[in-house]
Image (cartoon, rainbow, N blue to C red; front, top):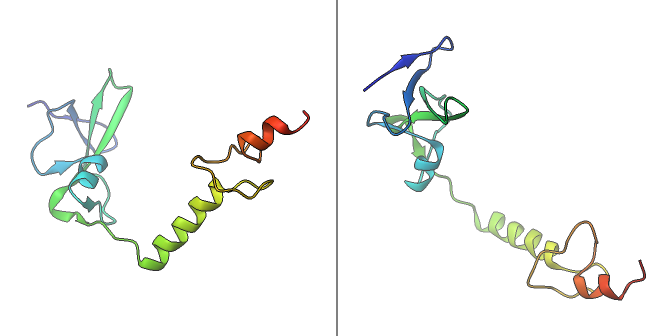
Length: 112
């Protein structure tokens, strides 16, 4: 396995060659974990150095936080507001486009 150290102090690994015990944010999320306030300890480079993913230690990762019932209710209310037309007041099965400010039915009927 090839490890390269860059000037920032990160261990840099080629794509798919990171050692066990390190994971990206996406991999942590899939495992139900989060970085837990810890900084990345290494990075993976691919696409000739144009793409980078930071690696975090699994032993320092914390469980993902879950939303409280009040937070879930607030999120549902906000998402419902994004689907409610300001003109006709109907709740649509899609998000109302911000550029129109109304549902497609109201936008088609309005003179432009």
